[in-house]
Figure 1 (cartoon, rainbow over the protein chains, first blue to last red):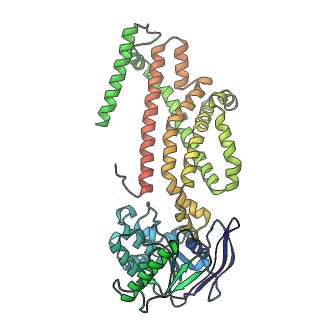
Figure 2 (figure 1 turned 180 degrees about the vertical axis):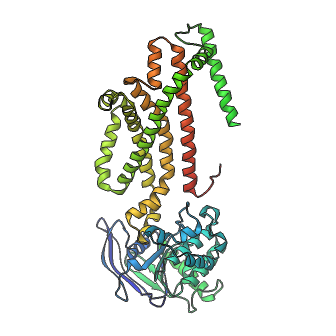
Figure 3 (figure 1 turned 45 degrees about the horizontal axis):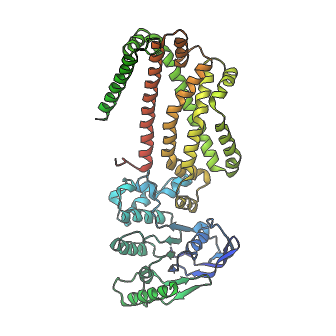
Length: 241
Length: 250
């Protein structure tokens, strides 16, 4: 996956003429960028713009890949809710993209991905038989199945309990290695653990925040990550006050 | 236990009926006793069965055609904003016209045979089926639609593989209503002009002061409707179970 490009987004977004944000965001190739900011600032809109989805507003500016090729078709997406189709089995959900497009799914690859996320034993179960953490792992396998170089994650771990969340963060960091990742999150701890780059979004800019010296994914007791988390938290509370 | 409940309810109903006949001492050509009705039903069983079969055919065909038309309309409405803008107001307007009022015209156009009755049944169930299914198709999680779009699926593929399966329980709710409405449509059609069917038999018996036969026909119609409702309910529950991905907890 050495061909994963960097992505840049620069411009302004307005809803019915009211500006939401004006920003310049660049996602370095093959690295994790964590995007933090208050609710309603437009983090998800940034994500939708890169995905090429409707935003309910107008964007003027540019979204480009560093290799100059098309962006939207090389991006996959994982959300806070697992978005598994309840009537399909786990493995059928993993090959959803191919099913939707009417292509013949590569079942061997799906099985190996399920193995990688630890769900081999559950491949024929329906999502309702799985726990929340297992469902997110299935969603991760589905995201990997699309095999796109850029992956956008919209708070995918926020509904999980603390232990499961830490496991999922490590699993995602491992399996998404080599891809260009944008993680939208509310959690300073998550950003401090996972980010090669941390951006704090406001209406005017997406300001970089200093990241710990160690490489992600950082240990839960990594001193730098804990320090970064505490400072980020203090800053976010200050901004909100 | 539930089956026993139904039995008790029927017994209670019959007892109340008998009580009213006994207290009011109504003559049998006004309100026949359950026993008289049972006798009439037994004596005329062939006539009743023959006419019930006609009504059942009308109802089942009406249900099938109405469901297919309703489902296709709902899909069209969900696919196209223009269709919604053009067709929805017309659909609502047609609901303002009572089907009763259309029956004579339909008989004129489609004749005295089962055609006009099927059309009546179709008309009466078309709207509930369309509206329930369209509702289900429109209420799919936006995240799912976004996901499918990012995967490069076309609107048709999203409709076939995400929206329709997701909306099957709503179609089931529409069908449950339709199973009760369809016999109403067919019987109205038979009242207005027919030479066969339970509605026709009821009118005929009434005209000849054979109130016991009229009651027997009426009860046959009610039993038929209940069985149809149960059968459709079973089918609807299966659709719900499928869309939920397995057995639903009680």
